[in-house]
Length: 381
Ligand SMILES: *Cc1c(COP(=O)(O)O)cnc(C)c1O
Image 1 (tube, rainbow, N blue to C red):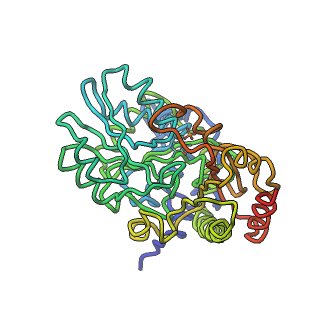
Image 2: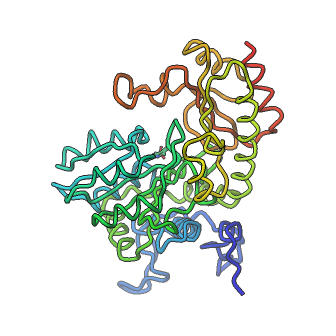
């Protein structure tokens, strides 16, 4: 018999009771080095904690199991994971396709750092798969997808883009931070690499910064592990432990995030102060059919525009009582922010500029009644 349901993997994969003590929870192996039994005599393969640490190994094995990958690697942040990946798979002269509204940190890494090493890039609206096909060049080595996107919750058809990337000899990378592996598993749809900011839903409690890569191919996993050790941007034992603690409840959290988001969306849709709601769960969302196919539910991120413009949006952000005004997302607590002035301020004046009357919320797992009531009181003013 196979006991491999998602929630079972989240709690048990990589997390056998400790062989020595029977500890049910993987201990925090707060050590930099390991005693050897004679020169080169490693007890369980551990020699130095940049290379490997048992708490990190547990997290890496768990994340690989959750994304149905061959290998998982845990990093100090999502950006550290991205940097290690890009410097492993790209060389001078290569080209990369990124989303038109890529996460700001990803855009900054590629346009300010990776580009200086002779890598060219194009930002393409990947809700249109034909635009991705048209942007492919002989030197394209990576197609980088985010779905849902931030902050407009655009949906990309992962299966089709993976095929387009492979036809052109490129790797398909999916930043799965917004969906989490519970809602969407890109490797099972043909992608080669999944990126996570585990800071968000995977950790889920806004108490740790971390990142991960999960790959379908063990050989690519080996190359990435070589670069992880060489560059050294690894997750520390305590951060790995906190993330593992969070991941155990990922399934129940994502169900509640999605349920609460649907309730909030229903309230916003009917509200006279709201002009437009962006949520892939809505029938009216242009990516709804694809989202329905590739996601288990539609997640906790919602954006909306207000009829009365930017001032109304800014005021709303300051009037909520349960929703905390702040950046980031994916924690148990609800957050609200103004992308134009906060997370996406750097896009001002560019093609990626976000609407000024846009508000983004990360719907938490508090009482759904309270979340709806809080937004309604804040919209009343
Ligand atoms: C936050 C985030 C990142 C970067 O992760 P950090 O852990 O902050 O370094 C990458 N991609 C997406 C979609 C994010 O939301």
